[in-house]
Image 1 (cartoon, rainbow, N blue to C red):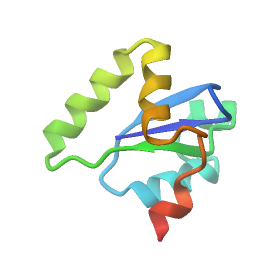
Image 2: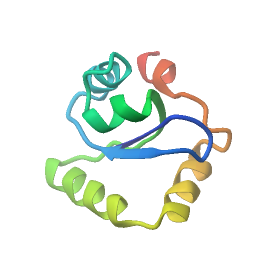
Image 3: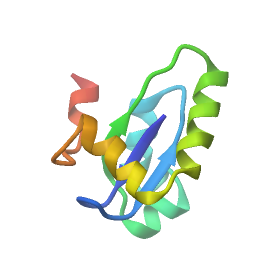
Length: 91
């Protein structure tokens, strides 16, 4: 499960995938989703790895329903400066 953003406390997108590095590369190339491409969401700001597909799907649905300020808190708890985590993912 992951959150993409365009900037600090900007527009956000919640998604999930089995191959996070590949999916984020797609988003960064404008091929991930129409929403991300339209709003320039190329910054990976939060990610969570879960053991089963069902847990991933449940968490994605849960986070998508959250209020915007709850999503801000989720990101800022793990990534206070909203740095792009893509390079960390590849390391």
